[in-house]
Length: 235
Picture 1 (tube, rainbow, N blue to C red):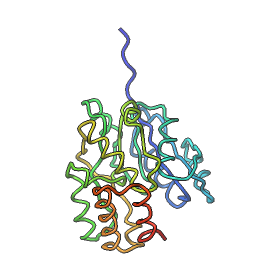
Picture 2 (picture 1 turned 90 degrees about the vertical axis):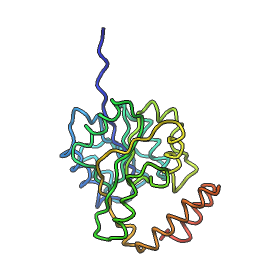
Picture 3 (picture 1 turned 30 degrees about the horizontal axis):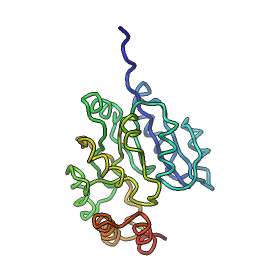
Picture 4 (picture 1 turned 45 degrees about the horizontal axis):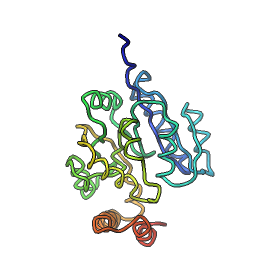
């Protein structure tokens, strides 16, 4: 009787003009994971005009071009992925050491999807307070910065990211996942950049993210959410 091949992970990173971050992240992933677990690192470029794609290629990533839009880029990466597990990661989020083994252990225990808890690279007590809630297993406490692992077969069953969403695409998918299967919160932390908060104001940005969550809960569609984001956050 043939043994099934061991599961491997395809890391998928959407980018757009991220030359300042991509090399650091790719180097970090290589140093903090095992090559036998990582099938590939796919960097999905949405039309960068800087050196992002060239840097990613230099670090050994598989660079794929896509039309602009995080949901479109993530779906494109998933379409080309060869690993049995997809790991969607933001370019400014750093997973814990041996994250690959943690993810595969969870999948081998029967979990189809989940994420890590999160910390910010900031001393802000306000951000630490909100990051604490990422340990709570509820859709209101989820977000793309926590990263997302999902088996490729189950991702296909969900239909993937809804490309109508120009923002909130991670949350929209995760809300659907919660309705389909138990969601696993891994007992370790990613560290994500607070750069958006530092640019827009910590309390101000958290308030607007809260409004976006609320608008989604009361039935606002992707166009309404994006319009609010452009009006109050986009710069």
